[in-house]
Image (tube, rainbow, N blue to C red; front, side, top):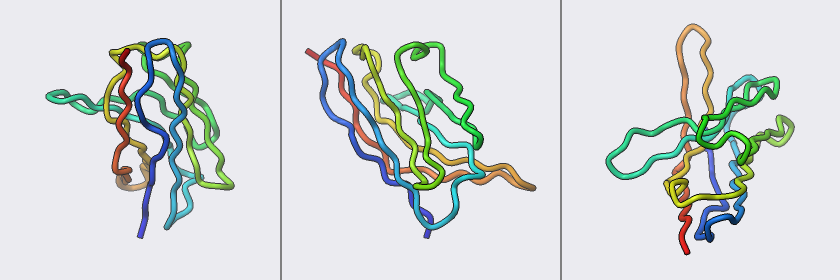
Length: 118
């Protein structure tokens, strides 16, 4: 059974930092693009930071310069270092693994809440 398990969410003050981690199991994730999406009530899930199988990151404009995504293909993990957090970063953050080969395959974690508030 393929699983992605996130950890590291919580409450942080504006300007603070948090680190999210995602551990994969049940398949080899090295060929997958991995990364993080977020969702707030009433809105669609949106990509935040993605990283290709060979380690090239891609960030949304709203987090560029503040967030850093990284992966460890030996451990099947992906992390998101979030700095200079803003209240608008408040959301449920989801880990994602995506592969397109003949067909598209997506795996999702269960989500972890990040709240930025004073």
